[in-house]
Image (cartoon, rainbow, N blue to C red; front, side, top):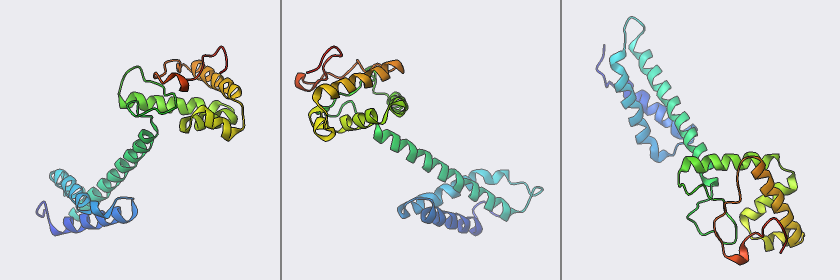
Length: 193
């Protein structure tokens, strides 16, 4: 058996780190960290090498290949969570003229992530016109949504009530809204502005 950190292991770690940086979406700035991760995993596993099961070179190649795959999976999971987290509305941010759902007073990221997924699920079941309006209202106040859609304020508020009803039916209660200035709040379900 060779020494735990031999030149072949360093060579393989360097090769895999270059491949990860070139093809797996890692930055070249991460090259040193990637190589270090590969070597650390190799050092952790090297005591488990069994000559009866194979040669040392095959063991090194297998460990490096498996750890490289693990790093790719972790990166994809992290990227997926970052995208979803970027879609979440920050309850501490300035609300502007849009009404924002509060998450029961919790700042728990997992709870907000679940809410984001639930909101998307509900929106996908709605007619396209309501989906478009929900997207518009996430970006602009009702007055601008009226201009963009060409619909009257009363029609927009009627569609907002339909959106609310869909969320209530799905078990999400949009009636718990962050308090906004009176001029920007959505009127109650009973009437229009």
